[in-house]
Image: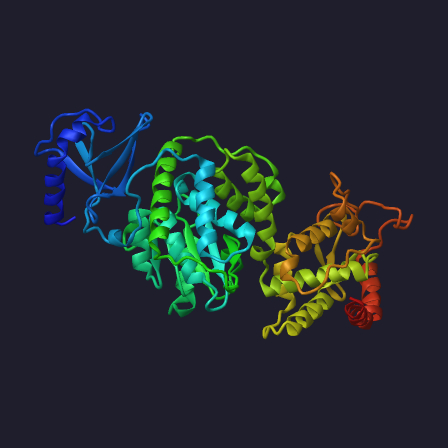
Amino acid sequence: MGSNGAARSRVRLRRGLRSLNSSPAAVPGPNPTERTIFREVDFIRFEDGTVAELIEDGKNPGHYMFAALQGDQIRYVQGVRTQDEIFVPLSSTTEFLCHTTLATAADDSWSLQEICGEIMKLLQDTLELEPGDYILASCFVIATCLVEKLPTAPYLALVGPPSSGKTTALRILKLLCRRSVLTADVSAAAFYRLCDKLTPTLLIDETASLQNKSELLHLLRSGSTQGIVSLRKGSAYKTYGARVVAWPELPNDAALNSRFLVIPMKCLTGRKLLSPVDPTVLERAKRIRNALLAFRLKNLENSEPPESGRETELLPRTQDLYLSLSWAVRADKDLCKILFALVKKKESLRESLPPHSAAVLDAVYRAIHLFPNARGYSLSELTKQVNEYLQNIGEPSSLIQRNVGNILTSFNLTNRTRTNIGYFLWLNGGERGQVHLIAENYKSSLNFVPFNDNNCRFCAALKNPQPTVNEDSSGPRQGEKSVRTDRQSEHGEPSEHKKGVQLEGRAKRTKKSVSKGIKERKASL
């Protein structure tokens, strides 16, 4: 901080010492001396439960103070004193602060249901969304108030064509979310400084026009997890925080997309909507921000996690997102049930596989249903089917067997041996069930229609889940002795050489029938 800013802070503090000394949020200590350290902060928490949050002075715009909670009382103070330090609000010259939306007071007269209801009503009056998306957006706004307590920072993606209302939605969310900053472009350096200084809710518009889109994707990926810092030129920056991004379409980045709650924007239907600059909208948003500030102050010290429930039915990233959204509203059990159903419904919009992984999964899944009695499949034949899939979806690149093998390993399908006809993938019952489960979870990213064959016990198990599915021994595990089944010969397992001869003959006989069978299956679908 510059000398002028420090001087202004000291003058401002000394003018308010009388109110500071009488405030319950002020920690008793000696009068300030030359040795007293003045420290500018945006938020502070003490061991006795006292918390102080930066707010804008409602009577003096452009100046800042603290809303401090000690016990059950909220006071407004110019600083908080400890034994040898005095904590003062950030000065008006602080970088980015003038572009950050802050509360001006703490209104603790609202219940959680009233807060959520008022947010939804404001969103309905200003935006055209699906009914469930109003609830999701409202829970997101509330979650930004307690972002430090959440296991994962909530991310919101607004997706839609031009003139679908994405920018309007960002402007409305800027009025509601904690410490919101709206930008149309951001550099890495500014991103790190802003996030480290203020932990804002960052709203990013017109991402298609960003010059370095890959840099933005990296910055977004780095900011969703607690405790991770970015190291730049000898300094460590916190990048954690809630984000809202407007996309013309979701990026080709499965890892990042899995962090987003996706809200498709609807084209306007002619319904009259209020403008983000309407005075009534601004006043309603101001009251909501003040109510959310009181909600934040009174819930920050509540470390009780949400009750465990059905979140295990969700995919891992979706679980994190649901827990983050439900943490702030966990007191409303009915709302949490609705929220779970809505987040579950959004899974298909978020979870997707890269094209190459989807192609390999497609090939294995088809092979299991076209040749259910086979104990495994040739990697060379699977690779041909993978490349045919990629060609059909317009993917210019193709894969070699090594690439296919690496993707199979990522699916934990590692039981492969080298035979006379090349590498062979063995699939036992557990692995076949695993392929079905992966296909069920990621079916939205695949172009084929699932077979759901009535004769397939794994498809039946997905329709009517059982506790476990016993594994059979459809092939030998490396380092394990083969287990005899009803289908095996009484004379025992054939030798590797005989297996290779048998498989080679089978491959020659089925080489043409595989492609033919797939084409016939496609035609029937």
